[in-house]
Image (tube, helix red, strand yellow):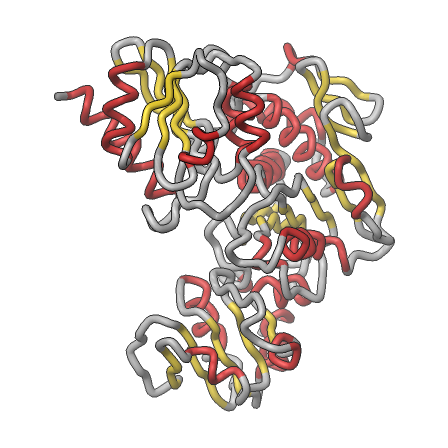
Length: 439
């Protein structure tokens, strides 16, 4: 039996354990618990769950009622609690991410941020593989943290994308932590922005002087750690991007030497951070940079998926904040149509409307419900044609009618309430564009 399995068994053995949330991670947790000899397993979820001899269920509106009668609560990332439970309950909460950080062998690189964490995590993993490392990519990118524990060794380099939900209750931190940025987001899951930010800041809370933190320069007032801190920024900080290139302390990599399929200054920032994180993990900078040309950008992230009758269409469905829509327009200058809107979580759109009002290439602003209406209300630039769409089908039809150069779907809003997730939204957009041009 490997060391991490022994530690997990010791942690759970003889305990009454609640699995809070029974999606992919909850099901993964159940499989792990079956080998850990807990006294009792309870699955708690608002949705109905089929009973089984190996566990009991607590479902429906009162699914949180079973949290009193247990020793350990294994919370899935998708369950938001806000103030629904007291401190006594919160003290029992742990998660796959928490236990992974406590017990995983090898070197752990953790990446969080409101935006860019999937791309940056994938870049670090790509560089590590190019440099011959025994690398893994897990976490919020789609692989529950403990799902591959049998494969981890002391020589493993484990790159882990970490969401705010995964970090909220952790009591350990990665060896190398990356904090890309923090914007107002997920406020439907948190009592306020500070609560959301504090969950993100947990990524370095338990680091020691042996560890390293790469943090956005703009977050320096929030950084209090014993770890070595490297600040990243756009022309400020120890590493980052400037004049179309990358700098890593005194080393400057001109833009002409960066061969990449990733577009935009924000992605140069991600690349700079990924290069430094990979170097801290034992990778060679030159070999990493050479491999960059082979990195394939992730779906739904400024994805140029087709040109139809001379018009480019870009799927940036990952965009759930106004800053990302601005970054999309900067990455693709000349864009004449922008589609925005989705679930309204009450975030401010002032930054986006100010950017559009100052004058850009955008001539057509297609508004989706619900939040898009608030963007429209802030537009005073008379050169922008505001077009209202009831749904994505109508938005695509309007885009085909009015776009001459390029259309970007960059919603600056969550997809929930209209779609299962941003992936479903992005794929629907691509399908509709393809279909409308085939008619």
